[in-house]
Length: 99
Image (cartoon, rainbow, N blue to C red):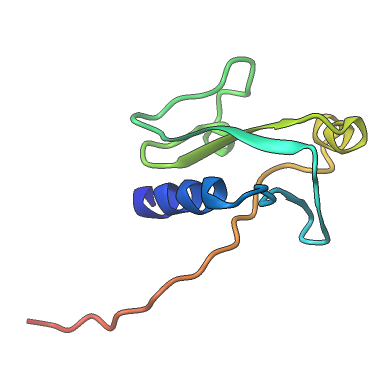
């Protein structure tokens, strides 16, 4: 997870115009930017979130925070239309062998 998080940020900021935040995989949100990214060092809940398993951030989870200046798109976050991120990426599969 940490490797994917680091690679995401490297790719994001190596672009001349970062455009990796989109709306439901349909179109880019041009006035949005990642402002924080970290791997949770311990289990925790964000302030004012319900204290249940569904809302707990687990140790090792990747957390991303974005600034969305577009008022229409930000309202979709506030009203619950958008509830999270879907990270597009690539991966390589390596077959595990028993020793």
